Image 1: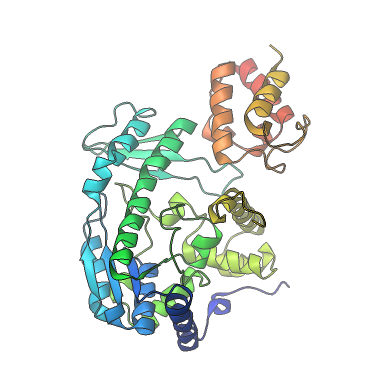
Image 2: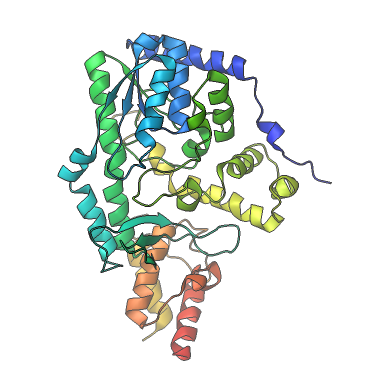
Length: 325
Length: 83
């Protein structure tokens, strides 16, 4: 009988870990970077909320500033939920709506042009998202399709061509990069450091944009599985509205879960698969907990390896012609 | 048209060139060699559809059909015969 991996394997001593992370934040910000505080881009999601709480605890609320940066595709409740995070920890915030910046960059037009190469009728009033097929149910290559909904509710799904996929990706990556520009503006303005908010699942699997949310001065929860981020957030007093919100990409005009866009399974199951893989367990060790077959879990393991390989470039520093580098 | 050689030329010109690697053998796994990722598969499908006049359905986008030059050639031949 193979030892089974369960959610108990992800339990940590939250208070002890919070203290350890706070020490890391203080050392990073004050000693290594020589800065006076931290800027955190707050999306309304659990990761940025958790980082906000940790920064407030580590540095003091007066040495933190939160940025709320919605755009026209953000869900209507995003701003209110985002605002509840700095309010909960007594942190000042700045509201920087990025819609005008994105429009000036023709982000929305470029995205629409790319979609129109596969859905010619796509136009004003239409909404869209891109999705992947399930990895557990077949050996199909994970190729993106676009799902679009017309103003009268008709839904169209088309597999993307290479040009359409790259066009949509390049256009939507503007969002993360513009948000990072604002983070560094406020960091420069205050002599603060920019806090990155990836969790271990995102960091390991390359779920970030180079020069966008992948760019930061310190990343204090990059070692925590998303399940642990939720536990930590509750422990630190993050508002319930954030803690119970399911993870979204908040990037496309149609609501889109992180599992349909990128990951194979919901985050809880992905965390366990990643944990099992990182600790040398076999797919068989997850059969009972995930209620999936061994070959399905093996596909998720293979997908984890594949994502690490294709996103390895995101972790690289620039290659430089300096000796020793 | 020699289907297998046409496919081999496409793979070499688009995925091998400039990487200092040997050309893949007909039976070599392109994914295991690290030659092709999901964007590359999209490019391959676009090439097959335009060059050979076939249509690749979503459930046909599997390694059995697309992972080696030999498998791709066999897949194209089957699709053309079925038209």
